[in-house]
Length: 344
Ligand SMILES: Nc1ncnc2c1ncn2[C@@H]1O[C@H](COP(=O)(O)OP(=O)(O)OP(=O)(O)O)[C@@H](O)[C@H]1O
Image 1 (cartoon, helix red, strand yellow):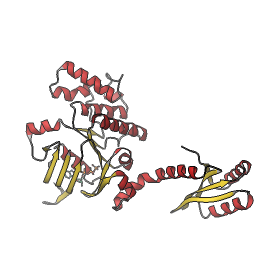
Image 2 (cartoon, rainbow, N blue to C red; image 1 turned 60 degrees about the vertical axis):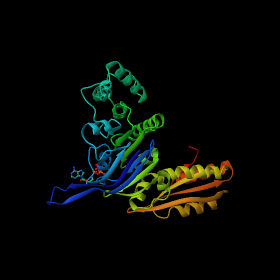
Image 3 (cartoon, rainbow, N blue to C red; image 1 turned 90 degrees about the vertical axis):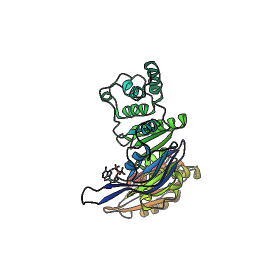
């Protein structure tokens, strides 16, 4: 559906004469039909420049950009405008028309495409249902929440049945819950309409949650790309490792807990949280000495911070219910956080 071959984009740096910035540096990418493809990178990595080349808002200095069979990098004028109807975009700050209602915003691209009024109204209704904005048709953007505004943006982008949806940091202005709802909507649209989605983001959570494949950008280059699960399991570039860490630690902990609860159906799995020096070992010794319990240390991780160590330890304790309760009470009295693990 999309292919970029040896794409470079240089900008004048604006400081010294003849000095250029390589915003995009020798990028080769293929994005398949109906795929959700994520491009992740920190600010200045070249993501915006790259995505803007997919709809002809920027032209590459060198190389070719082909989208839905058209060489976007070579076409101009009416031909480019026509090609752009197949490539829609949504934005971080929604870019809605503030003096138009929800309905009128969604109808706008249909008006431009010359769709007659009756058909337009039908299509707007369909889109309102698709994005879950029933009842808000007559509202103005200023009366909507961030999530609702992005739903209008999505409906408007889908109005002319595009083949590709480009998402430029589409959830970066939203809170985590709203982000997840919008990401769910994008997945739903991808599945229902078979739409190809390309998104740029600086949040690995977005990639983890919805993308099939990911490309990692740094200083204009794609430093790593592949199926999301593989990149998570085996990140190679240091920047990828940093992005993966954004999300794997809490997730892995949850998975580990489920795994432990299955491995130890009897007794209790307990998470202990320590802050400070060497608090864990006397506690375990006391548990073994003073209670009629079997105690297993199953997993732990202690991290050093500038203010001392911080860590968690998972232990499994088994014995009579009474003894387990006494032990938990004892731990609670120490300088240690304690949580009895249960299934999520
Ligand atoms: N029109 C322009 N003129 C000059 N330099 C530009 C222009 N557009 C982008 N750049 C430069 O190109 C590099 C890549 O910018 P780009 O906006 O593509 O990165 P990004 O990864 O999208 O970052 P952000 O998320 O902050 O937008 C940066 O060094 C930027 O300053």
